Length: 262
Length: 107
Image (cartoon, rainbow over all chains, first blue to last red; front, side):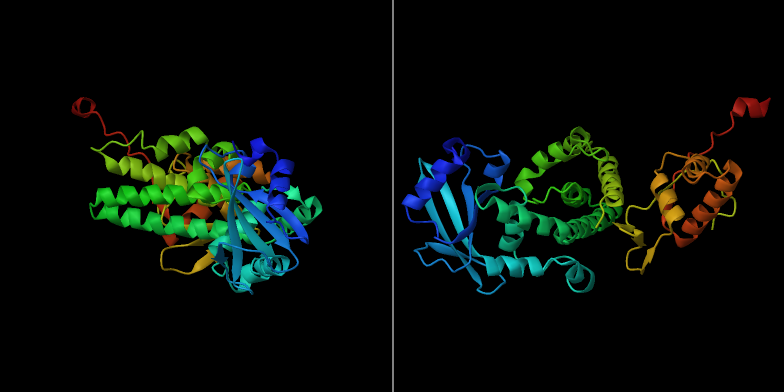
């Protein structure tokens, strides 16, 4: 059973009973796989609680973030056997995260969004596909702000640059006859390009484990899922001629870069 | 330099040329080289050079896209491809000409 099976109202009620919800919540939402309907039998539920004040209840850990204050308290609890991980963000922290992904920051200071920590990027990414328990209006407004920001471009540029780097390595390794290394570099180039392509289709998640899901959903004419899967699973790889597979992957990477606007 | 660029030639941008699609069109950079912006028609031709179409085929697409006559489109396309070749950003994938049949040569 997951929190979706449980029902969001029932989940929210259970969390309130356990006194794990701040009184002044602007929003409570589920992010990640459960919100997307991609959860499996061992999935956690990632729950975000955003309020105007710092969480004053008990917590059993924290996420380090690069905003002020620099930590987000966390709690893990179980509701009907479902593991729930709660993160207590302050709205002022959210505002600071959003301030890192302005178009001005993208064009003049931090094109790759390097000032954005992993937890901050996950917050913005998960907000875009959140399952809302409380604060529909807040979430809708904040989603619009994220969509209007340079967040997607920053992540896409990061993925494309990563792909370029792997392509360069794959070419050099092929030229020097190191085909095993070149194949691994090409695999990484394909992964980064697939992520860039998903971002180009406004799929904000870049978690590797959901790459196939994303490729299936976006249905890109540049790299249809079947073609992606054929390359990812190396079905056309011929050990006697590794260059052919490597070249076909690098060509896909080139085509992806032509399509993804940053 | 391709002094004998033919409409039947086939090219594709090198895979190690970094390309970024921005709101203003394509930015292109060779490894360890400066980035430059491609003008609109050059961007269109860049995309169309897929390693399968001939230069003439690309010119035909240019004629359709920009509503110009085919001879003008071909001249423009040849000029752009020539410039890209001089920058060293294209791979020549033109199929090799079929060698003459020796029996015919003998006769």
